[in-house]
Each structure stands twice: as C-alpha cells, then as structure tokens.
Length: 470
Image 1 (cartoon, rainbow, N blue to C red):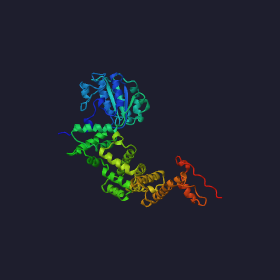
Image 2: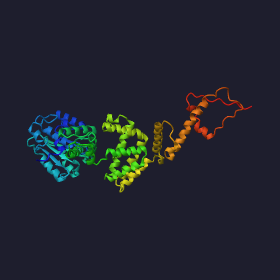
Image 3: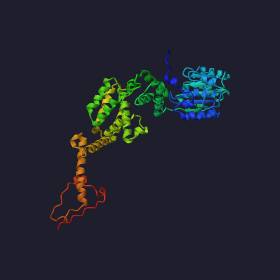
Image 4: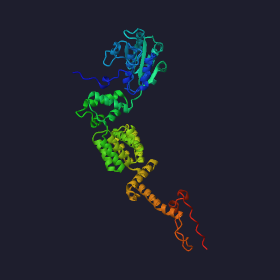
C-alpha cells in the first residue's frame, strides 16, 4: 500500500474560490478571466507557501479551459483534467525552476521554443518559479519576448523577492502581491482539514500549529501533517503539539508569571532550572514568556480581548490570563515585557543563554533597583494594588527600602491632609481664638508637604488672619 501524498499536495486548491486569504488577488484575476482581459505576463510575489505557484496553475487551467472565457476552470474538459490535482500535466503548460534554469543559455532555449504554437490548448503558458534566481543576462535575453510575445504565449513569474526581478521585466507584467494568511482564517481551515481527515484536534493545539507555520499555508499544513501522523487515539492534543513543536508548556508559563507577580524569586529561578533540566531551549522559553506577557498586556488593556479575537486562546485559558493580568498590574507587565524583549535580542548568538535568562529574571524581580520611569510606575502600581487588597496604607517594612520610603511619605500625606484641610476651611467651634492662646508652631517643611494649597481643595475658603497682639 502506497503512502498518501503530503497534506499540502492532497488539498492543493484547484479553483480561485478554494484559495484562502488572497481575495485581493483572486477576485481581480477572476474578473479579468471572465471579461477576457488577461494580460500576456504576470508577476506573482509574496512569502513562501502562500499560493503563488498554485494560483499560476489555476490561471493556466482557466486560460486553456474549453469554456473560456470563464472565471474558474470547469474541471471537465481534457485540459482541466490534465492540469487537475494529481493529473498528468499538459504539454502546453511548462513549469520552469529558475534556480536551475536561470542562465542566459536557458533563456535563449526558451525563446526559441516559445514561438512554436501550442499542441492541444489555446495558449502556451510558461510558469517561471523562483524568478528572482534568473540572472540579469537571462532576463535581458527574455526581455523582447516578454515585451512583444506571440498571441499564443503567456508568462507567469512567481517569486519571493520581486525587487530582484529587473525593472524592465517588472514594468511589462501585471504585479499581484500575495500576503501571509491571517491566523484566525488559517485556524478554521485547519479545523476543516482535520474533519476531512477524521482526526480530532484540541482547540488549544490549533494556535501552536498556526504559530509554527508563520502564516504560510504550505508550512502550516506540513506541521499539521506531522502532528496527524503522530496522533494517537485522542487525536492531536495540546501536549503532543507542545512536545513535537518544542514550545514551553502552559503550566511552566503560569508558574513563572505567578512567581513574578508575587515577587517570589525562589520560584522564578526554580522554573528556570526546570527549563534547563528538561532540555528546553532558553531562547524558546524567553520567546514564549514574552508572548505570554504580550497577551497579558493586551488583556489588561482590553478585558474582552479573547472574545473579540485580539488574542487567540481557549476560554479556560482566557479566564486564567485575566486573573494573572489583574494580579500583576499593567505597569509591571509592561516593564517585564520590555526587559524580556531586550534580553531576547541579547540572547541571540550568546554562549551562555541561561545566564542571560537568569539576569533578566533578576531585573524583573527588582523594580526597586530600577530608577527609570518604568521602575517607578511598577513600584507605584504595586503599592496601589497592596492598598486595594489590605484596605489601608501598606506597612513600611513589607517591601524594599524604596517602597518603604514611598509608603512613609504616602502615610504622612494621608494623615496630614484631612486635618490641615479641615482646619483651614472651618473655624474652631465657639468663640474666636483667644488672644492669649499661642498659635501652634508648624515646621516649615511639614507645612509645605502636608498642608494643601487653597487651589487644591475644592470650595475651600482662605483661613481668617489671626488678630495682631495688643
């Protein structure tokens, strides 16, 4: 029994309607085919695996369909069956790999054969893949043919680097830029493929597959094909995807984020030791943790981010992330994300990635030693959350020296503000102040810090001046 074809070959689109994520390209091409306004040369550019060569084959099928002009090939005529998925191919549709046929001699050979009429079809179509590999001399040899081809000739250039195609060729083609496929669209497409394959997949595993594919349909389907091949009776689980793709388990990420929010250094460095002892890459752990911090920052700013699609996480994970974001605080999350983003750049090419990871964790754990604006905001955020939890002013000895000084100043300002404002706004009960009663002496520094200005107190009236002594 023969092994099945790769997943991306078994489900290669045969019409423009089946191509996902490229409506900005497929719709104009369908309109041009239906109106019989097809150009003699096209340039398809974009990232790898996003449908350039597939769209070129569909365009060739539609051009040579017996029912042309038509937006989509009929799939019934001889030409459509020859160029269908798994078909024998057509002698009039020639695919050339420019990586191995990009010299001037190959271009001259193509130019000599191009003038011969097609054997069975209406057009002779040349699909030149990896067109940026054609040498400048080869492009110059094709220039006149691309500029003024015979009526039966059509060119389709596909490339990932359109800037390397010489301008004289680009100016004679219709350029269609392809894009990476959006994650949500790719996730739904993968779910449909799993249903067709009869294999279940956990919703939590889909974002990992999409992330590993990087927006490329072919790369994503290759990753899914690997997971489908290794799936057991339970199908593609989150644990299987995490293990095969090398991502950090969610349990470790939850543990380290909770340790950061609690300021528990022992737990943080314990997680780092687990990462090393289990053989995981510190760089991958840092990248995964940075992505988790990014999700927490978004949830802290937009509480319904999981339902609106700003972050792609399951419902149970969304509740867990919301709780983590509320415990950590926006300022602390932003500061930690900045530190890990900077550290991830420093870790590339480093000889001791574990050492750098531990230093990053130490910086995150010590906001009191950070005198920048981010460090100050992180300390204030921690104080505010402590006040909300305890219902009062935090004790000075409960945090680092920097936080203790801030707490003392905060305590003195809260204690002095109500008394001073009341004394300034309300005269003493009974008669006016006696002449023989000395006024209380207030130190100048205390008066400046504790007594608020009249402008700061709403509807406050200035205190009456004391009468001069006789």
